[in-house]
Image (cartoon, rainbow, N blue to C red):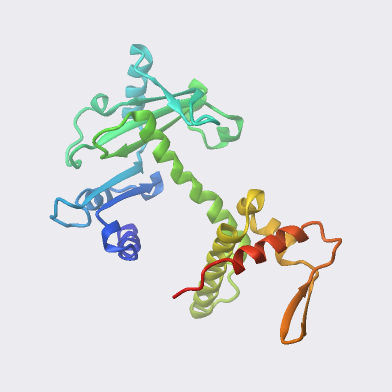
Amino acid sequence: MNIDILTRAVAQLPWWRRQKVLFRVDGAGFSHRLIDWIASAGGRQSPTFRWEYSVGWAFTAREQAAIEICDRQGLWQPARGGPDGGVRENAFVADITALLGDLPGRPPHHRVIARKEPLHPRYIKDAGVYEIKHEARYQTFATNHRQGQIAHLDGRHRKHARIEPKIRDQKASGIGLLPSRELNVNAAWLTATTLAADLRCWFQLLALDGEMARATPKTLRYRVLHVPARLVHGRRKRRLKIPGTWPWADIIIRAFRCILALPHPT
């Protein structure tokens, strides 16, 4: 299923964007078939196509043994990703590929990278016995990137977590409130909510700035979309009358001006 979805996603890209693609997938979507498909650029034999993967990797007893070797031999390197993009305090990364033994059937340049950081209280409920025992949070992922520092590859992989807030926002926009027992009705509902989510994202990208450009759907509805305004007609024009006491009236006015300044599509 993942391969089918990714095939459709790549097909939407311009042809010149399909030659170098990075696929980031969490552990729930990992499969050997998936990484083989990515490494082969979807089955293409052209050398101009170079697809890379950065996918979650299972943290089993084999990885735990590799972690302990890193601890004993001091193989950890500082991880990056602090507030200023610099070194992240008390977070470390290590390439544990050579410590895992033989990995038959893996694509060329396959690497496994581990990350270690203190176990935050909010992660304790999802932590494993090994993590609770060592009071540390461990994450492993695999990539076929040929070069680059492992701290950079770790930061690149963790950027995929940005999808979680997007899923949360779509749920807040009605994607999880299916209105019917009928498949066709629910399919139409999902299409409508997905279109609404796309329009909201484009509106925030093109017309809003500051905190409103990153606001959740709830905040956006309360401050901008549900404004108690009136649309009036006169002199062959339409005017939106916004109450002068509305605290976010200036945000709405700036948004209208940004939209009006956009070039008309050809």
